[in-house]
Image (cartoon, rainbow, N blue to C red; front, side):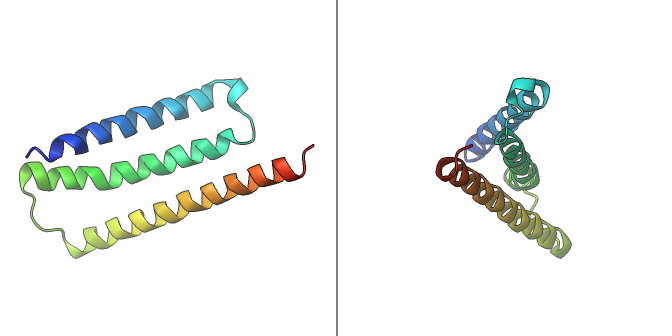
Length: 106
């Protein structure tokens, strides 16, 4: 039961931090620079990842929700791996953008 406390704290921090980042980037015109949409996409990927994985772990820890059905397990593995691939692609594009900006300045 005590192991669920770090899960809840990290889940709340992820939701709050990523939601604030998305809100700030979408509402402030000064944050519409070329790299800020990448941060927005990365924050969205982190929100999807945390909303898909942590609630199931908390259900297992709090309510002893034993087994997952095969469909839910496959769905969870799909969302986990696709979100990691998406986030890695965004980080690759951000690194390439920085490389271009440093090597070929305007």
